[in-house]
Length: 294
Image (cartoon, rainbow, N blue to C red; front, top):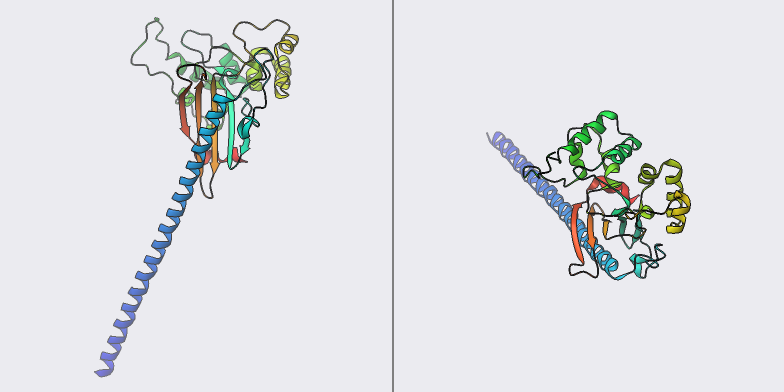
């Protein structure tokens, strides 16, 4: 009996020891998980704070630094400061500290036609980007829904907020839609700036040969009114202005140890108006944007 009691007691002791060991291990693993989550949260918060600081600095630089050499020469200028010395308005990324920044003059993009406006250039751009005929038809049909057709605004129609809304009925991958969004704009632009336009937009507007020549001149910061007229053969019309702004798409991203923080924003900047700064739209960056850091 004594031996049996001793054996039972030993088993109970071993069971209690095992339970305590499992409990301690579980708490240890839980503590490690919470420490890791806290570190990730701290890392992301620091990245978001850094990104916001860069956003503010970029906005201040745009409001206080010159965008061109002069309004007559129309050529882009290297301004002072860490941002102005590196920026361009053709979406070419540059780095300042731990931030990657891109800036695009929205007047260099193809404006999405408003209701009643021609869609030939938009259709041509989609074809150049490789969209199928069915995808083009679906997108143009979606765009046509914005037009009530009788000249009277329909209160039930919500104006487009994002380019992706035009592709809700198309089973397309995200990459071609993103590229389409990179070269088009929904912002309120009233002129076209070939000096800040992507190659695809210039080809659609001027043809492959002339568009390519204009893009090469712009990439070397040599596209002014004189060179534009030499290449195109006619003086620029009243809707063509080789002066950036006032609407800019600004992309600011900061990579933390385990996260990416930042935003893509569209800013309306009029430094000498009563409302010098206005944020037209914004969206936060996600992990899918990590390729922009490479």
